[in-house]
Image (cartoon, rainbow, N blue to C red; front, side, top):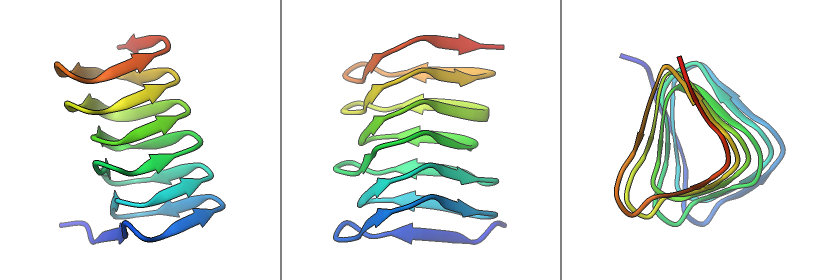
Length: 104
């Protein structure tokens, strides 16, 4: 099982985030996020750059492109202004995406 790191709701990071395990983001990141594990962007979180991970689950907001090696899932309340790319993409009712969607 991969280790999980969390960026808390009161934390703001300016700069790129990289890692090997799973990452949960509840705060704000102004810089790219690249991890080898799963990325979960929590409700109320804001990412202002690109996000890449094995599986990316979005419940908050992303202003940038989102790509997953396996899947990208936008849950209710998610807002993405940017492109989505993954072999599997799920956009649930109540999620918003303004950009191109590419699967395959």
